Length: 359
Image (cartoon, rainbow, N blue to C red):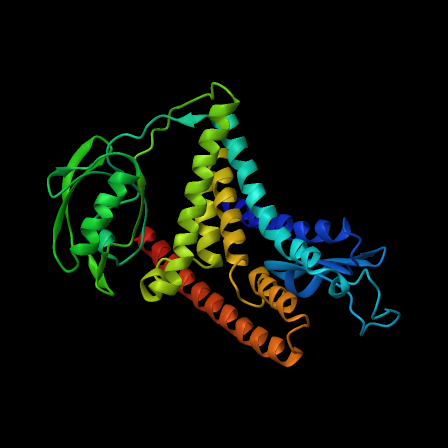
């Protein structure tokens, strides 16, 4: 049921993204001939007033299609064709999906704060959310739910500062043993970590966050509501952008942390076990990720189409079809290759975890 919940959330976020493109075109009077969730062969297809709506076999994305002059009965000079519209209107259509996901994430965070409340200041230390098998944290005996209180007998602070302190210590201590003090339930114990070396930086294969209290308090007024929401939204957006930036500046290290569809569904299933709060958090995180991902300047993504459109605006004429096709095909192979690798890797790790749990 939890897996089904996370897949449903993913489908809704993709639907909302494509609806941004769809509505921005329809409201400007631009012709649209297709609205699809997923890729590949159609499972369900229905045509309503010249627009074909479809649900396809592989729910890893979606698209809104526009007619062109090659179709029968279409006047190449029709002003309502997307390609004949001014650059700024086309930019609006291309960018609308990204803004739709950002807006949705912001609204989800507002709902979360309104219904759940604002958490009190975190306790000292760090919470362990997840552990990767066969990594340093797993080998040392660290478990999800543990609270890390000290590193090398130095008491950790609170919030992001505590996380940064521990991460910095781990990164500079690769292939060396560092001692951490943890709290597991009511038991206090010490563990010896030996961070593994990846590109000259230590890593332990654990997902960490500040030791947030479960108790919350209701917002006092609308200003406090928006102040906290703005803070949370900005933090998630900045961290997501930094994560994608790392793919360029430090690919081999960041790629180890990159999640594919299988891992995303697994994380969603874990968060959905926490109830409404976990589902809302998962939806906000993935919605922001979809926005940032689609902003990347790859031809198959919104960012790539935006680049093509802006170049056309500067040149005064479209980029030659041969160049667009070549770049788009290369982008497709890159994205598909990365997706396949991540699916294989994440599925393998999931099977390993399940096998360990059965032992």
